[in-house]
Length: 462
Image 1 (cartoon, rainbow, N blue to C red):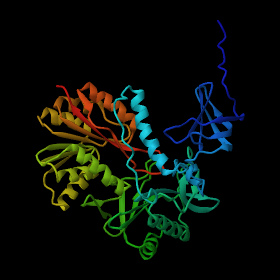
Image 2 (image 1 turned 90 degrees about the horizontal axis):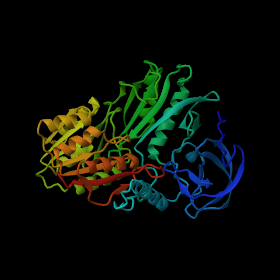
Image 3 (image 1 turned 30 degrees about the vertical axis):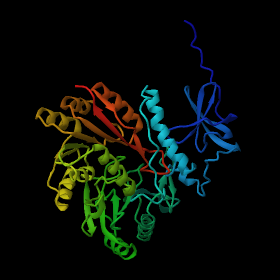
Image 4 (image 1 turned 60 degrees about the horizontal axis):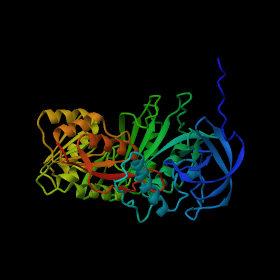
């Protein structure tokens, strides 16, 4: 037998090289190619000439670290604190905002071109006037570092906590609230959870703040059923945090990556806060999914509703309806709205939100969107518009097939992942649908690589 030839790679670990950055990955890393072999380099931007050291080598790609710049990009922003990049809080924080918006538009366009869908246009990304301090929710881990309880964020690709007090993209009231919680946990010597031993009490601090209501919720996620000094900690937070509406202990005693458990104990207030979106009042509980950037969410949903072309006579299905945010906004412009969501608590919230807003033309059911669509199709439901806002994994094939069998005239696809959006567009085309308007990207998460978008598909054949 012939000996298997070892593949000769163009770089070796710890080797120093100089090169020009030619692209940016969807994760925000610079790309240098040597003999068509890609090297991914954090904090390197297209157009820059750099000297770098190779830190990891695989058969198909390598990783590197910048040692020095011979030429910097005119789009570069010098961050005062490199921890924002190191932890992945703002992976695009080194890129000026106009360039970020172009990058997000390009992400979608590039994937369409690769799929031979280059006739589909992509509009400029809809950005924010102030692309910082926008997040209305924080979930920060708690760890013991050098004997002291710290709150912060994990270093990229690890579970090493980097202590942080100013998160740059969060509502400043939330940052201040996290510090108030941290100081009380320190004062009463509450032990942080240790994932290696499974011991310790406090795992995560979650804070939510209503953008319009300003109501604040603190959720203390514990590994233990009892939170020592709960009454003292709660009393101090009530005194120190403006607009604090409720404090909740959430118990997560499982060895899991899930941030929240299913059991809540309300320590103060009603256990929920209120906020508004497109003029509709929503009740938000610790487990509720609620968009973290209300300003851009309103623009995203307004774009989706405008493209649906509703005049009050249509029947609409909202798949992946959550707590009813899109459904209830659409209901004001439609004859009837059906919502489906797999999380029972979210459907309970959706029904309660409909009731609180005196909206009576909605019907919410618990179930997998794919299975419920097939049930509705068999029952003879004939929607005029289907709105989908799926998780990052995109749509199940059953849902797309059910939409085709129902012959839904128009589909509004709200996407948070360009890759699965492009895949699903191809599947919809197999069912007789075509994209009839340019795709509209919306920047829900400035300073990060994530991009949302609205796509309009219409049925062109039976």
